[in-house]
Structures are given as structure tokens and as C-alpha cells.
Image (cartoon, rainbow, N blue to C red):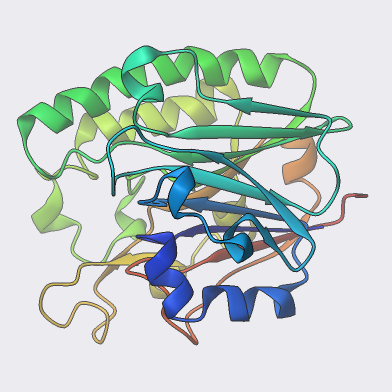
Length: 259
């Protein structure tokens, strides 16, 4: 089973850069996308169904902002759109597809980089999302939460960690929150489990400022975080960089799990 996670930074923009031309060759079973920056009326037919993958979407109320999608090859038994929190459901940040005993989730956690107000919103989201993650891991299903978490967990996860310790995405409080997901709740960072020492090869996002991409001054902020059972079945993880569809790169993980 192959799961891909990709922040598109605009589904129309990513399409113009070849994302949907690239997708069929990947033979993915689930594709989680973030930052649609589109509403239902903007979605072309090829955005809804691609290579036999049917999309399910959570749009933001604000035009040209946020939004997530989840494409699945198998017919979904159940689709959950939103977290049941009014503030963040208006921003289109969560869609979950259930198939058999497996749940796959596409997540776009808020960024706090634009200023204190958004950082405060990010902390509010983390506060409501932690108990949700606790409930999920206790529910008995195998679960993979894919997406842009907007946090680099450890020093190994970004190039310039020393100069970013007071910046959103690498704040001590954010990093401690992620540690709690793993150490207290038992979630597994699949890419890091498979590639414990990976540095530059694991980055998934690069600033558009300067020559960050050319110099690989990146951050690992896109993850597949899974329950221990399915995490143990992961066989390979890679970040696709041969083409650029957005300022993020797709994270591809294969699992020895029946579909």
C-alpha cells in the first residue's frame, strides 16, 4: 500500500506544474493533499477523480485559503470532514477516510509564521487536536495521519536550527507538543523510524526567499504519523524532488498492508 502526502500550495497551481500528470505513475492507494486554496466551484473534474482515485475534500470558507483533500482508490466506508470545532472547521483542515480497519487522515495544521495572532491560533489548534489524537490512538483502528504539521520536531529536521529557535515551526512549545505525541500517546513518525539519520534528504519544505531550494536550506514539516501496528509495516519512505509542484515536496511511504 502506498500513501502520498503533498502540500500543493494551491491545487490549480500544482496542476499547472504537472502534479496530476505525475500522479498516475505513482500507483498510490491514498493521496493526501493540503492547501487546496480552492472552493468546490473551482474544482475541475480531474481534481475530483484522478487515475481511479476519488477525492474527498474539506474546503475553507475563505476563498483562496487552506483546504485539504484525500484521494482513495478503494471505496470509502466512511468519510469524516472536519474536527467538530467551529473555528478551525471554517479553515478546512481535516478530512478522514475509513476503509475496513484503516483510517487515513489529511491534515493541515495552522502556521504561526505570519504573526502572534496566528501563532496563538496554532496553539489553540494544538490544544484541541491533542485529545483528538489521543482518542484516535485508543479507538483500535490502524491510522495514518498525513500532512503539513508546520513543526520541525528536532534539530535534525531543519538546516538552520540554531537561528530558528524563536521562530514559529521550531518553538520549544511546538517541539515539546510533538514529543508528547510520540512519547506519551505512542504515535510513530514513520519517515524517521525508517530513516533515523536522514537530514537534507528528508526536508519537505523550502522558503521561496533567497536560494533556499537550490542550497537545500529546508525543513521537514510534512509527516506521516501512524499507530504502531501499521507503522511497523512501513517498508520505505522518500521525498520526491525530481519535479517541483509547490514549495513543498511529496512524501511517499510504502506499507506492507493489504488494501
